[in-house]
Length: 198
Image (tube, rainbow, N blue to C red; front, side, top):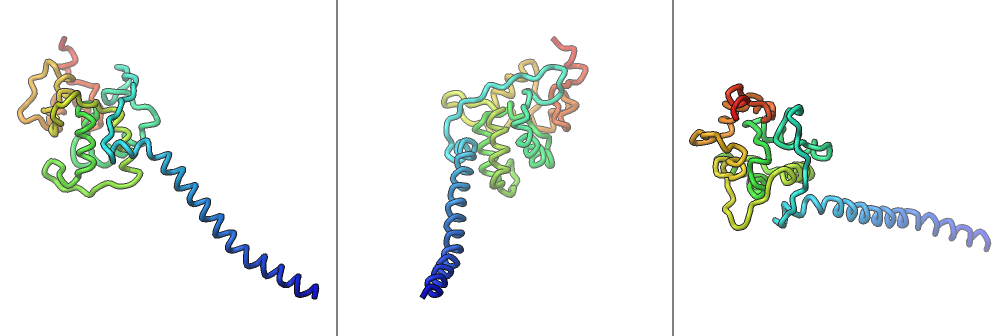
């Protein structure tokens, strides 16, 4: 009789082990997914839902530091690299500062209408990381102004170029006329003509 009880106990322990392991795996997966969703919600929600954003305050770059308009902290470096990898392979990369946040959202969410070209849509973490960079360094629209699709229509672009008689049409390739380092994403360096201008 004692052998039967021991055998039943051993069978019961063996039978519960896979079920317990499966239950633990399920609970662990739920918590992992929940935690990941919370971590990504802050970055993913604005692009997916079109929420109104408050821009972060970002330190300005010094003249000794070459690069774009704003200093890019380490937190946003991967987003910047993804932006350059995905966009600068076809055209000069524009600094996010020259277009409003809403334009960048449109460019990322509607790649099939990218200035006359059809692009493969980006998905997943790369899209979220790149969006975080573009959203942080672009400027929000004011009021009900229309969303500019071209750089020449952007009031931010015009504000950064107050004394420049811009070519018509203004294209990203026009930037190298005044910014010789534009192909290397350096918009701080200017041609000698503009360096010495008041």
